[in-house]
Image (cartoon, rainbow, N blue to C red):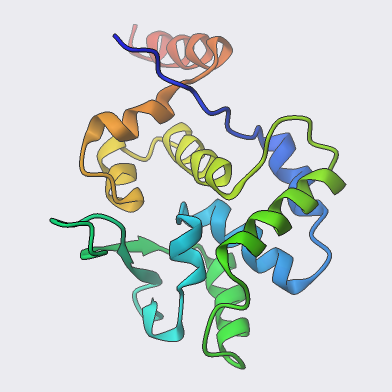
Length: 179
């Protein structure tokens, strides 16, 4: 099998430190939306009120891909109550996302620096963190695949790079329960 670069997601402690360093409502909007939806930075920055399905508590995304890479792939991404509240507040007075992709990347790095996180942190690492946390919460791989907009299950399976401790802990819990 070819070498697969494994991005290391943030731990729960690192997520808490990152979120604790958000000083403005814009920083909270960016960090929490990325962490709790798994959106790509380009998808985040193209959000408008028309993308939000308020009653369904979800976001309609027109993402990358499609037959000729024309952003024709569509999917629905669930919103947590926290993200829904942040988006409601923001879009009550604005009609488009506040900053572009490069600025979001810069903001995420600035917050990570304030949090004194030593591993690389980017919007894509937050997407990876979302996927890893979702899988650890026993959300099925197929559901995470659909949320992230992956065509192939194998693409989503890269987020299964659990630590040895996690594997041992889960095995012990499940094995002792069944025997």
